[in-house]
Image (cartoon, rainbow, N blue to C red):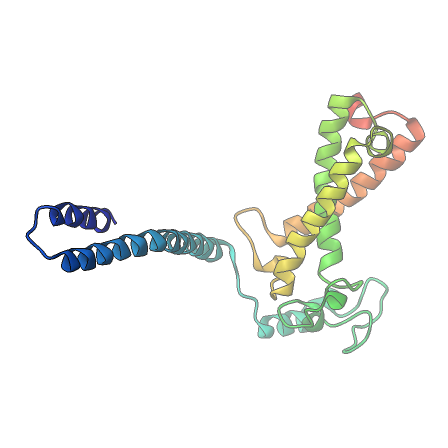
Length: 231
């Protein structure tokens, strides 16, 4: 790029002393300006191309270290051998095409319907994932905020008002980040890194949902921030 920029400048400087005709000087000068103009226009394009290459390289590295491909054959095998997949929590046997419960191969984003209606169904991939993540964030937020403000969760949301603003902003953000991979045919089971597995997330999310519900109910009866009294 430096050579491209300096060469036309040197060429224009040499034209002043060179014994060339006026028309030839004008022609060379015009060509030099065109080269400079083209080089300036190509700089943003090259920068964007380099940025795209870097982003793709990071994405490929992350995918290689964390992503696991889940095949239809693996799902069908688990569906046949896993006892928990042979009946729902209500004891009903999964039936193909039913509203609930659906077989694993039909409710998974990798092999089933990827529409929002399917993903947000009672046995879909989205509800537990999103609610669990919100509950985990909520427990951490409650512990820090109650210690700092001395207010219960209800008071932070509706009395003070600040917590409600953060809550309204956080819910769509976590929901969007959770839904996009599912729409692309990727469930939480397709990602893992060290101890951060889908199973660990599910159990932590379930415990967080129960814990957050217990926290709100306890504070409604005691009118005292639980985390502020514990620490």
